[in-house]
Structures are given as C-alpha cells and as structure tokens.
Amino acid sequence: QLFYLSLMGGGFILYYMHCLPHIPNTRLSAWHRLSSYAAMLGGFVIFFLASFCDPGTVTSANLHRFSTVHFDNVIYKPKMCTTCMLPRPARSKHCVICNKCVARFDHHCPWLNSCVGERNYRLFLLFLIYHSVLCFYSFFIHVQITMSLAIDTYQLHDAYYLDAAGRRQSVSALQAFQYLFMRHNIVVAIGIFCLVLAFALFGFWAYHMYLISRGTTTNETFKWQDLRAEFKRAQPAGERGASVRVPVNTYNKGFLRNLSEVLYPLSLRPTAGFADARRHGGAMIHFPATASSVECDGGAEDEPEHIDAAHAQPESAHPHQE
Image (cartoon, rainbow, N blue to C red):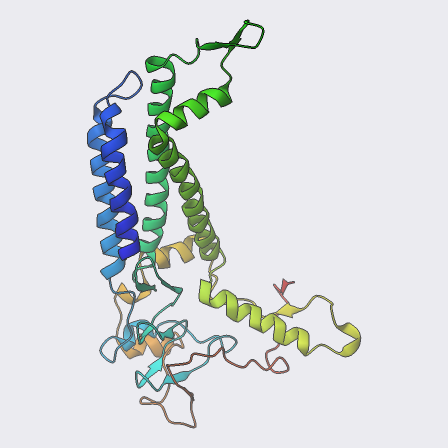
C-alpha cells in the first residue's frame, strides 16, 4: 500500500510541477486540468475500496454462505482448517500472510496488502483496468504536451543545422526527441513510464479475464498443474511424455455465468442456510466435522491436496489435453 501511495503521489507531484503548467495549450483544453485531478481521485478511491473491502473471510457466522460451492473431489476435498478451526469451503484457502481462510482465494496482492478473494475480486479487476486506462490517458496527455512543445513552442519541424560543408540539414525526429528530452526530461520520462505501466496493467487484467473464462483462479492454476504432473508420473514407463487427460473443471460454467459469479458473488446472494449448502454439495455432512469424515489440515501450511491419479478418473466427454 505504501509503495502504491508513494508511486501515485510522487508521480502526481511531478506531473503537477512539470506538466500541468503546459496545460492548456493548442492541443489540450483547460478541461484536462480538472480531469487529471478527477482521474487521480478516482484511482485512490478504487484503491482504498479494493484494499479494505472484505475479500471473503470465512467465519463460523458466514460459513453457510461460502459453502454453496460443491467439492469436485479432484482439487478440492472436504477439509478442516486447524488454524481457524472451521471446515474449509471448496475453492477457499488459508492465507498465511493474513492468517485467515478466504473464499474463492485467488492470490495475496502486495499492492493492496490484502487477499484477493470472492468478495473483492471484482474490485481488484476494476483496480487493474481503471489504472490501465488512467496510464493510457496520462500517456496521451504527455504526448500532446510534447507535441505542443516541439511544434508550437520550439518549431522543431522547421529547425535545421549546418553541416561541415555549410549546408542546411533538417533536424531529424531522433534529434528533435533528444532535444526535448534534454529540455523537458521529466515530461518525456513520465509519458514513457505511463505507457509501459499501462500495457503491464492491461496484461494483468486480460490474464484474469482469461482465468474467469476458464472458471479458475490463480491459486487453482497451480493445483491443475500439480494434477497434470501427478497424471504424468502415473503413466506407464512406455507412455511417458504422451499427452494426458485430466478431469473436467466442474467450476467452469461458461464465461457469462463465471463472470456473473465474480460481479455478483454467490456468498452475497440469498441463501437458506446450510440447507442450500448441502443441496449444492458444498457443506460437510457432519458439522462439526469428525476426523473420519474429512481430512485435517493446518492453516499455516496449505499444501496442495495429494491427488491419486489412479482413482481420479478423467472425464472422457470433454477432456482437457496437454
């Protein structure tokens, strides 16, 4: 959080000192002075919402709300968290940094200093795409300021120099850029940095949209990788290296339904207590659970479940192949 605040605050101070004095100009109206303040304020608001919103902390009071997701018995099986002393719902994980179980755990985000889970995943996506657009907008402003300085202020398109023979030579684009960088290095540097950051943030957002389309999370991608590795190790010696079939991801319900569960989390929808949880196969039959009915797992070290490739039979109808 401090790194984000330092980066955004320091960047805006540099923008205020070196870039804002060049607005308005022939290419940017005075409206952009106000819009830059509004855009930065919006970024801070979204950041604080994503940072301090509950990611989906599982407690005894709300366990029934997070238990409407079924156990697929492939990457998720009924299990107790001995740190929280609670049955752990499917798709949840105990975060060793936050020291709590988080529903539909995706990852722990150092930028937000918080877990990204079922209830703040939508805010995390908004955080990524908003700041990507913000950086693209900042790049646009800095390009317009640079063009105004180059054409309207210094008229570099008409500039020339005399070569060794005394002939006029027009200033090249590279020479014009070098001149502007020497005179206004902060303006040019901020523009380049915003462009790089904009593409990076957009890439992260696109990756998470891809995960949503596949009905999985960052945490679950590692579980599926472990599953494929387990299946490969279980192959006969003569078939090593051949493609393997893994069970279908039953949490993938199609892009629109997956997206709807992100935008309107299941735990926020009306529920009839543990009756709905048992109907969906997401609640343990015995509550509290007994040692014979579920596995016990310490929350401090959430190791991936051991998957028996001999018993986890692949689905033949729609196999994922590698």
